Amino acid sequence: MSTLGPALLTDHYELTMVSAALKDGTADRRCVFEVFSRRLPTGRRYGVVAGTARLIELIRDFRFDSAEVDFLRRTGVVDEAAAAWLADYRFTGDVDGYAEGELFFPNSPILTVSGGFAECVVLETLALSVLNHDCAVAAAAARMVTAARGRTLIEMGSRRAHEESAVAAARAAYLAGFRFTSNLAAGARYGIPTAGTAAHAFTLLHDDERAAFASQVATLGKDTTLLVDTYDISQGIRNAIAVAGPELRAVRIDSGDLAVIAQQSRELLDSLGATETKIIVSGDLDEYSIAALAAEPVDMYGAGTAVVTGSGAPTAGLVYKLVEVEGRPVVKRSEHKATIGGRKVAVRRHKPTGTATEEIIVPQGVPDRQPNDRMLQRSYVVDGDPVALPTLDESREHLRECLISIPWEGLKLSAGDPAVPVTVVPAD
Figure 1 (spheres, rainbow, N blue to C red):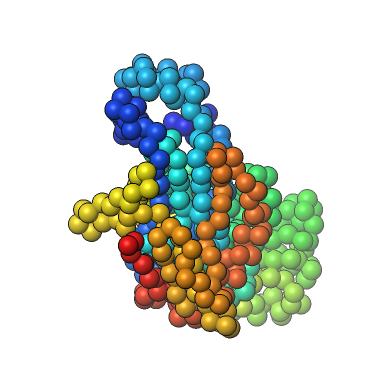
Figure 2: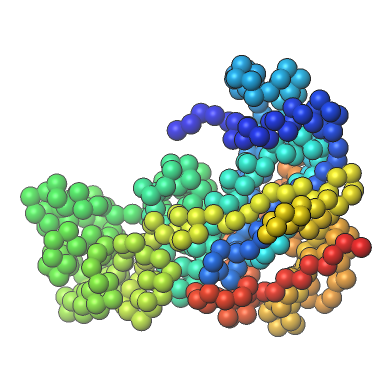
């Protein structure tokens, strides 16, 4: 695991800008940067804000220690003036943004970073690496939660991700509504409930399947899950119930035609008197395969690769752009990459019933509020000091409420328009 602090996540080009801005006197100009997505990933109808609390903690600890500054000086990345500036760096600006668990759409200003140009620009790579990853995982996980229709989901993708991104992915999946993770670091760091069972290797270790099951039950009791598809699934189920009895908590199936096998396994379990034994399925599940199992007797799903890689959208497509300098809106006019100048605020408009109808994005100031409007931004950092953040469970509940609020069409897994239309009111 890397021992580097968050500061060296900075890109080379960011420090090139810092060095030049310090030399020409523009480093302290008051600026506003916004994080937003120009478009949602193909086929998606909403994005999910995730990772903000992680980012705020990283910004709080964002320092260049002496070894890092020496490396940057020695390799010519920065000159002496920039090296001295980095040695004393501490973010003293403000960070505002959408709540974790909030839905976002094209042009939603989900994070606003304001302060001196130099102190803000060095945070670009850090902010985008955290938010692009966590938002992508949370959006994929939220779609899986919707597809599961209230059934339990376990995140188990650690072996398909970098060791640190695996922990972040477990957090994002839990935020989105997964109930458990197999990642113990996520359990220890964030208090996420953990769950897991033995792998095929444990069965293969023993002389036969019954011996493996007997060992697991002797150690963990009957409130465990036995993996029954190392050899023959039907015989595996018979062996599991013969060893543990009908009180066995669950069996897990990790291969084959899961729709057919789930039906056959339920019938077999019931015939053996194990009517309360649950069926857990896993094996390259994504939101589409989970939805396809909706009518089958499956009690829990284990999702791995698809959830930790964003299920086809490994990045949320977020960008970090300068939109204001000394109170003056600035815009980028590049074709297909144009920006909307000026600091912005956003409200989500709702019917009296609570259904979201529109997101309104306006220049800095108080928007024309209507009944049932909800302001979307909140303070995260004021003058360099983080403010109290919601708990992970509170953010999880916030997302659950947001998903309830969007029109039902917005929850479809098929491609379509954003679940909530966005109106951007231009600056005067």
